[in-house]
Image 1 (cartoon, rainbow, N blue to C red):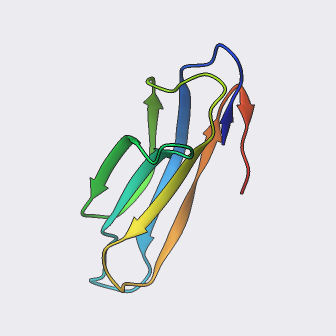
Image 2: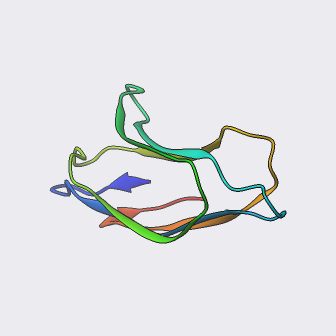
Length: 92
């Protein structure tokens, strides 16, 4: 995703990640990094299924590109995703 000039805040909304098999929950990290420097701007690890959480990220630099990644820490089959709300551009 890319932040327009003057934009320092964006939102991750409706984050969902759930294990699809009985007794297999999600265990993952949501990480936001600066595309140019690799600096981690936000990171949060979840040890259970997540349904509909939202987060404000307020330390963005205007005119920058960021990666938003969900990284699993198990081989459990999971299903989920998220939305990005930003004054800028979001790419899949």
